[in-house]
Length: 183
Image (cartoon, rainbow, N blue to C red; front, side, top):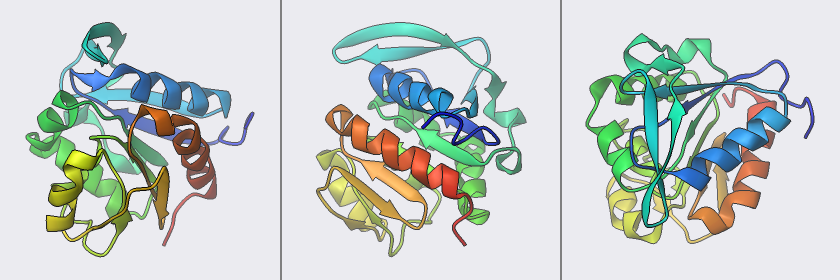
């Protein structure tokens, strides 16, 4: 994967309570592939991870979502965790940022509870996705075709179910970002 993404700029959008490993493993895969990555959040300073059953580490924020523009990035990554996407989908600025990637047909990778934020964009109708099983009804109600698979790719949209799927998720994420716009 080395330097496969050397000309790509990727946004990872998170709020406090993101599942730590669903952030660190994709970040590592992106950096190993040569991508330039910005951590974007609802506030500046640092964001706090959730590590399975308790609070994890804090990570620096590169840019506040209110100052971010999807046009400045080649792709978007949405880690899971229950609190994280719940905070993001309540923020119109975050939803608008995510919508910008759909508008420009840019790759989006969302794992576990990450697809919750995608629902708010109104862009899932007819798309095939997977997620943590508890989101099945929400995603189906949003018009998506939910399947129980390790990783699903639908025209540049990469989704996976949980941390156990991270190897497949990271591989497909890098592949789709490398392919670029999926018109």
